[in-house]
Length: 212
Ligand SMILES: [Zn+2]
Image (cartoon, rainbow, N blue to C red; front, side, top):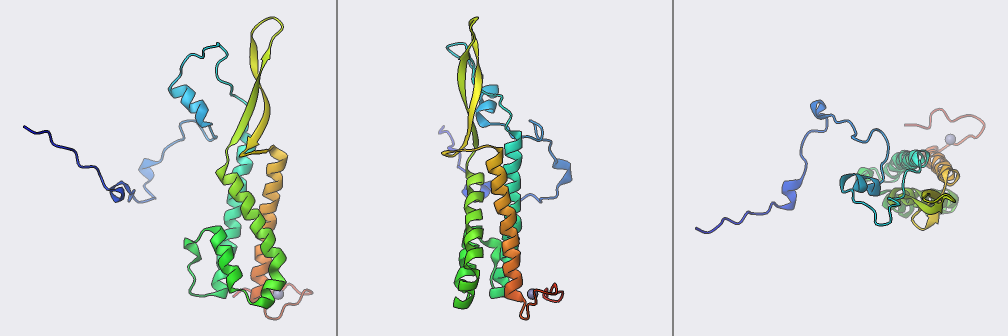
């Protein structure tokens, strides 16, 4: 008898169609509400003795930096929501919900009149810069570099010496700066939305009727 060859599933068979609000399936994060480095998890799951007895370096607390990364991404999503409003203002038929942030801003730029391109160039430049920093925070992990410090009495321990993201060294102050860029970017986007919406702008009053 010939053995039945299993038919592999199609890509679409692997799609998750379950409803998002299935409360009975709520899970608790197995590592708690924190980020765990993959190398740390790997060492837990597939532990092996290290040849020199030093063990794997690890344990430096990067939770404050991870929190800032999360805030950078979340604030960028706020900016994106405003960019969606701007695009719909410029093109009522546009579907900004399906667009990546970079494409969204490019589309806005393409739809701006030459007059508005001149007027808003600085805003667009700074929003674009914030998007670049958001992408940096999304696509790079916080990586801690360690050095082995020998004890005079023998043995030693791993000491953290640097944290990097991608090929940049980084620390909490730099990530805080990137969060500042994201917050400013949301302000710039709101100013653009206002400027493109308010036909009779009066800096002296607060333009109460501009929002339609
Ligand atoms: Zn106004």
